[in-house]
Length: 204
Image (cartoon, rainbow, N blue to C red; front, side):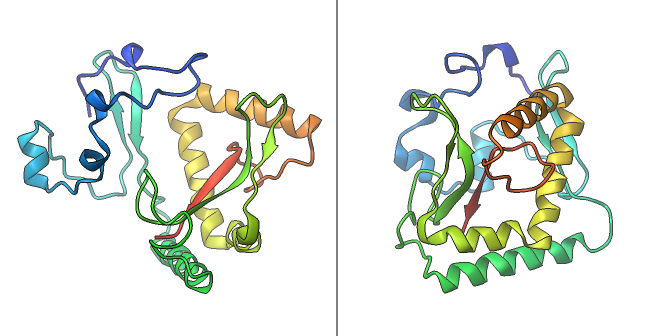
């Protein structure tokens, strides 16, 4: 899918390691962003409706062929649909046992009306070293989820898709990940062999 976007024009934070959030004029007000859009609304705004089965990977490219995003699809091997349902049921069960609803702590935030918790480590806010993310009373819950076979299957597919579609960026992630764990072996690793420093767990 080709889109009329010039990748080099994307706004980036200092150091170019992350995109800027954008101004209210560019992305709208909070109420604009939380509004529910129907297909007809989006089509009237100039969006294009593309049929997709949710399985076949589709790259999204800019006018000169650079991949700017990917619809990563799903593995073709048998049983993945069942594993997705197992992961869903595990999240729902853990959410229910922890009383997680839209009115719970972290239940309503800019990303949506659902509780979300992070596991792993991060870097920023002037810290000289990576900082382990604290999950408080959700620690045991997140530990169980990262060990769940269906959740691991999802994570490893995401990791493989990243390596396939953005190999140079993936190599940088992998190199940095390995160096960090060699020097700081105490840092948690959500999924052995993966390259992401952290994962967000959404209960909603």
